[in-house]
Image (cartoon, rainbow, N blue to C red):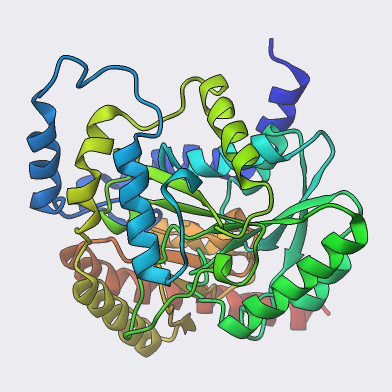
Length: 404
């Protein structure tokens, strides 16, 4: 019924795809009273100015207002100005490709850069679809775990994973799901590793910097883009996280101003977008972008929910990591099987993402996009689920002692 490539792609994303099915069934079972922390979806009303910005651009002002759109010059110019202001890096308008969110930017980069069999290093835990996007571009994902003690990149392991087939590495900072912001020293050392390996192999190894959460930072932290450290870098961004509007697709792919051969690469990227099905953002989203750029969800409220959940969950008895950015908490499962534990949570009408689905077994992820009412409603259930898990561990240990 389908091509071998399509079947391979489906097999790669099977864990998250199967979880989507369980999640949909759990949503239906728990109903409106359930507490849904599984994904970064909105549970409060959108920022009012978001709808206002779209409405202001929805009335056509010229005959070609809704004509075919590629990466509009005004959009490119605005993104370049913002990037220069944020990072003090001289991005130029022509280095920017407007895309359908970060996923569109990632797909565009991989499809343009990879030949069949090229390898792309991804750090575990990754975003669930990295490997699928790499496979769809006929590449091969090479998985390198992060450091378990600090959640930082394991630079020695990355260096050891590089082969003559290595074409790119994807770096996600702040990281989903750990919330880790990779420090400047790590990025500087990574750049040196990639530069040396590229010179040794006779072709550049590209760094694809997934910065979807780069403006969702806590405790006054600052974020430095990896593209400031390494010339052969491509920056991926989406407005869907900052605005918490993932259903309205708008993002971009920006090339480092120091990228070797960037003019030819920019042309190839534009052609690829056309051949991917005219994969540019809608006219409406590009017109509205300057107004949307100034908006962000309430970071103080998001940090308040982070602190509240960390405090309460630790008081209950959970081991919880405090994220430096993103809108997720990562908690250790009280039993080794995180899928079984998240099923226990679901019995108490609490939906969380099992770590195994995100290739970090033994943990589960909690989204801070839940409403405050939902958090308050869920805390007793988190306590009951932990009590139940503790009983299971004690019973298992007792049974093992008697049978052993």
